[in-house]
Length: 104
Image (cartoon, rainbow, N blue to C red; front, side):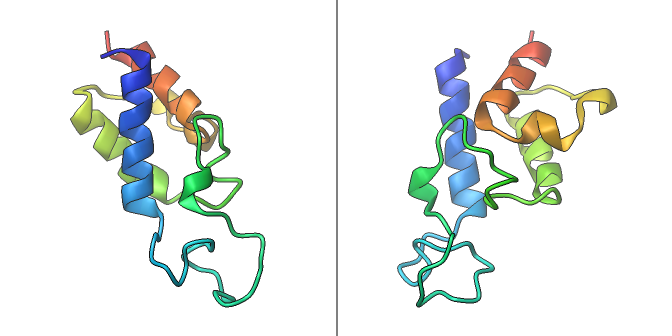
């Protein structure tokens, strides 16, 4: 699978599984305490391939395990333990590079 298609698969998965797209919280993190007020929350529409997913609150470090399972099943690969660090899953670009590295 080419790199841009891999990125799209990951982006779609993260938006589908980890963002709350309801009208009430369209511009807020799912855990935001102030859905009716302005805050620093961002919409899933703002996620792109180099968005810092953990740092910006789109995913948590706990979500990484779920993402790993999805990626290993989707791309029929197994990530070695040495690469299972949050920094390798912090952006869609980094996740894509990891997939390409082990999907040969």
